[in-house]
Image 1: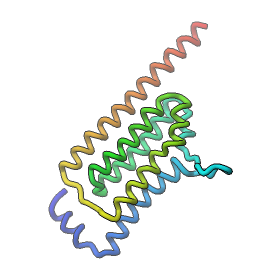
Image 2: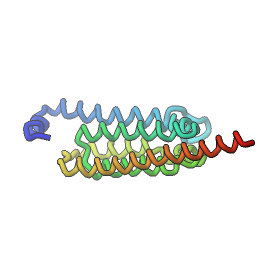
Image 3: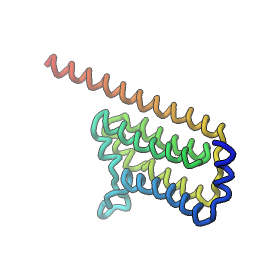
Image 4: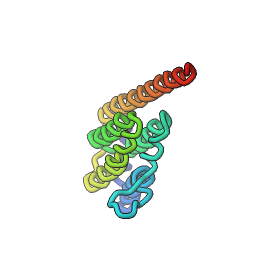
Length: 173
């Protein structure tokens, strides 16, 4: 990021700064509600989102949920969220993806863990004390995203191999 953009950010009137913070919070809140808290379950304090539901689809579900979560983190990078916060958020996505590889167990875990809601809460806590990210922060976060993407790709390969072996078993029967 160049120096002119940093100066522009600092000179924004307070109402525009609030609007930028509000849009950042809104994106994370939208994904949190959609993926983790879309449907209220009567009699329980928990809510059900699309994440545990689409996780039930072998192969596709885990990848789709992870891509939604990672795209929101990419939005956070563009908005200057600090690397330590993005790292914590990426760790939530990574944990959700690693456990999500296990069929059914992953869906139950996603229902309980609510990675996107955790990330939304982290953003809300951060908004009171914003910090501009540096070039080093962005490099660090790109490395974290690389690890997350490798895990997602590993999950894709593992799912493909499992489905291929299942198909072989079904054909031989």
